[in-house]
Length: 395
Length: 133
Image (cartoon, rainbow over all chains, first blue to last red; front, side):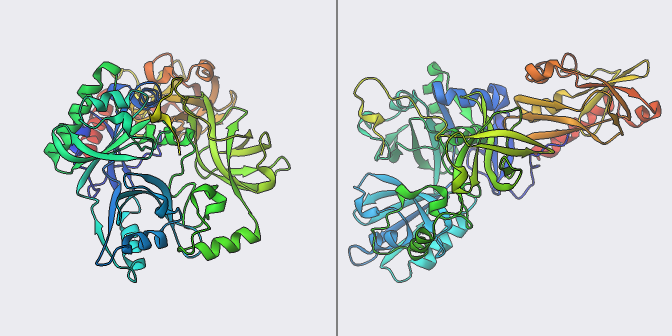
């Protein structure tokens, strides 16, 4: 057997929960230079973790993600202006306590990274960024805000970030906090006491396509383990499982959430990735805007589509895509069996002419070309709660 | 799970159970536990002549593809069709019901190059130590 899983090397970075993951018998992998749990075989592994999040609740250690705080310097408005310059979404529309999906672009209109922008105060913002791009993102932010009156702080190592995800997530977390969670809408956040720790940020965000929260607690080992264990204890009655990066990937793929280095990268622009609704071209200026205006006028050359395998075979990242005539037309960016749908699904870049639903395409799986078809995305959308419930409002 | 003493093992985590000139081949319990939930198995056609070290198929879990290599040379005389419908038996019975193929040995001396159960157990124990270092 020759496995694609990277071996562990000693210089990998560790989150404060590393010893705890190893104690739970997690299978660890090198993820962007981090020694991270991919799944926890002792509690059922990837498939069970995926299902726990879809049907009940799961908890992920996402402390490897980075956090950049941008605050104003001397005059009001400096941080907002900097954030507007750095990111594609319109941060002026954010209320204090609200967050949105956004991205930082190169002048070419391609991705430095995608980010969740949280508005902490009138002139105070928190960017949550990807682990693998942390250093690059931080220097990018610093280099590009030099002309703005703002202060940039790298808080990446200050927090342990836990994602509590799934339809029972609110019930689990509610046991541990005085914040009324039903008052936090999707993509909003509040501060309050969590596990006796005051002033903790609780955001109704996640990367699973399910309801859930991300909490930010002090990044020392003792506190991190205490909070993790409290979450596990509170979730026991719902069958909470510790979840690794394997389930995180299948969950986000079903929900068609982009992964840096796959659906978005320094070679892919906003239009191609289909992230138009997060990109506010009516803002006067942001890095990458001019190139995007040009690209829009020139027209799309490729676009991101969802594929479902029709014949036996699993599409994987970087497999080639062919049209019915045998012409190579694109590439798979993420592909996997879908535990929820029990189908083999993929995201791929193809020319717009081949992007219509039900278009027949072929994915080269090792030596064979396996039939696939274009399907609507997201592959999975969480069911809406029947009763009037403010917490399921989406933005 | 115990590693049968009468089997032979490769460093790539395949097992071989040779009887009367025919080798039954599978992947070890260690291999299946490294892979996680197996969802797809593809095996080479019956009648194919394999050389030791050449691919005899692949086993896929949700997150990874693993190429499986022939531990011995010879003709594939049988492939386990059950794995098409129930690939997950690789996780539950890797040394038994989830055998992959049977190979008619063309060079029985190749078996002597493989590890016995005790040597294989020592081999994976050393790997485990490496991983947690």
